[in-house]
Length: 225
Image (cartoon, rainbow, N blue to C red):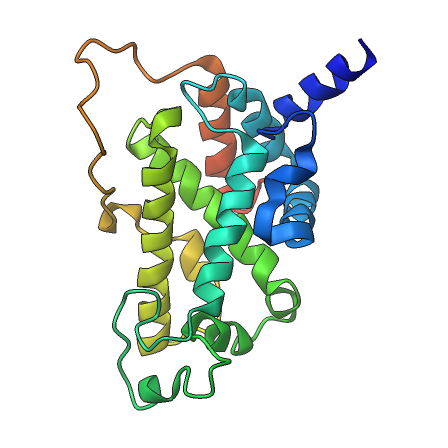
């Protein structure tokens, strides 16, 4: 039918609710849509490869759903007005001032300190772009599968927690440290439930190899096309 093709198109982009993709956005609403569009415009080569690889659900992750989860994770960090930077202890004379008015979070304060105009203007969108690269790097490092997505996303969150603590202690006033972040500092949480069977096919494919190559280019600032 006429709706079948449209449903297939939304699914190919990585929406889980193919008949009503707007339902996927949940609490992040138009912010997630805006960030997905921004990432697609500025890193079109990476996005095309991610969408292609996302069709192999066993080996990859759906692009749109991953982006929505990334935005939700970053919003949680941005709204965290506690004195621990999202789980990492802050140090320094200003650490006690964070969150006293109930409005500021460590990540918010870091974003207000950015010196480069483009970074400051598109601060949140830039965080999303870096989060996608970290997600892909962790995915490759741990030869992850679709069922490991939540564990890998947790690893991305840990990367940001460490970045927040590092930036608070020794400010660079830039988001570039996220681009060069050493993901070996982060370990994934253990799996929940019984271990998978020992005999598993290798988590690689031509589509995933293309994603890895393009993501490596994005880390070097060559991800647009």
